[in-house]
Image (cartoon, rainbow, N blue to C red; front, top):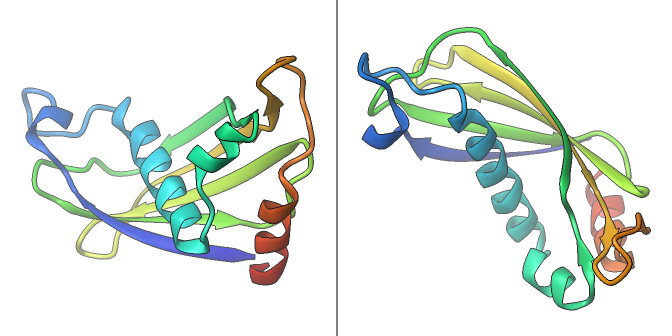
Length: 134
């Protein structure tokens, strides 16, 4: 298993009238952490797309344990447990600045050939990177 952590401060526009983070923003937090992890590993979504492979999200689940509030500093942990095949599965844990677990989630993304819109294998260089860290 490989895990990576990103930090993010809750912005005002992400909250409702009570100063609580709206549930829809957690999917954005997942994407932020996932992208930061890939950059950390030396992988670029942009390069992969230029090579004709996209990674659409095909499944999202989220469990809300405690609310996050305006100006909270969140730690978003993203984890990979398995090598990607035609799909890649990410797991998330979000903690507030007190170290309390406030959210868990999962996303599944599919590797898709951008010309045919059909599932495909992940780029070999991504598989090689993930093999090194898992």
